[in-house]
Image (cartoon, rainbow, N blue to C red; front, side, top):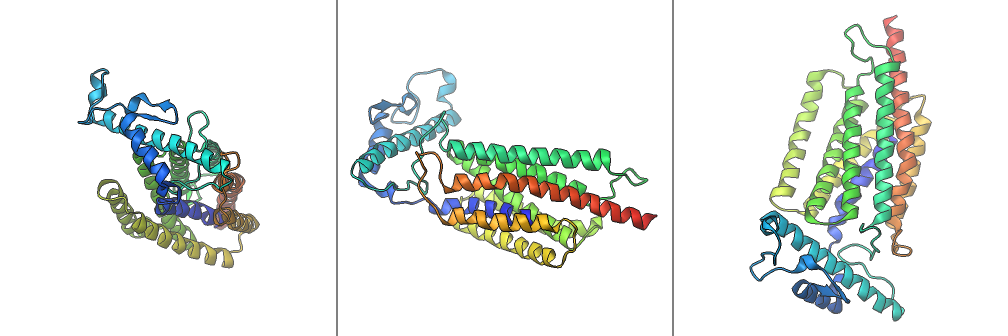
Length: 342
């Protein structure tokens, strides 16, 4: 299925981001000195951040009782570090631009200008639009199978994959939600939520790829296929969140699951005579071309739009086409089953 090409690659590239944590920019002595001083004084480039004011024991200077709580202090320290990094990055890039030097990456990311307090405002906007397209597709699919297609005598739909696609839509919306949050502010908690939701979507997509391509309809067989994958995904997410955020291991897991399901769907698409297979191939080709944006990386234009943001934009029309195919599949299989019943 075409959607799995670009959805899987979206998740795999999300998993790969953590591998790029060290960059030329954050190795710059001037940048590192600026960040260190800012975290001590709370000021950088003429800007001061009140939430950086902590005592030597890590407690907050002044404020009410809740400002002394551990979680609040963690949030403050995290916000202080990010604000210091941002201000020092902006100041350093201004100096480099004046010397005619090209932009550097910092902590694996290009230097973006904050807009309305968002770190990568354009990526946030496109992530939200993707979420909206998934919601619209999910809702239209729900209305189709619940109100427009006939039911069996036991009030269940003829389409055997209704529940699976509804769950897929929820996981996809959840993944895009945390993608938007992560792009708006990159801190530990948003990173973990983004990674966890991406891995959950990728694992579930693998299950769905197996069930749909091999036409597994028996409930017991579905459980036998799903249980080991679900157990592994749950263990992996717990490992990342509670033991170690191991980017290398997470990348390996994402790549193996991604390649596995891509091979499954590629073989299925090659032998399928589905009447809407043209939509599948359009999404496959479109998703492949969109991946060129991830390969041809470039600094953000005006500090706002980079290749990754444009890649998010390309997935919006592909999402619409993909949900159109899902609805076509539901109608096609329902029609075939009704003919057999008659």
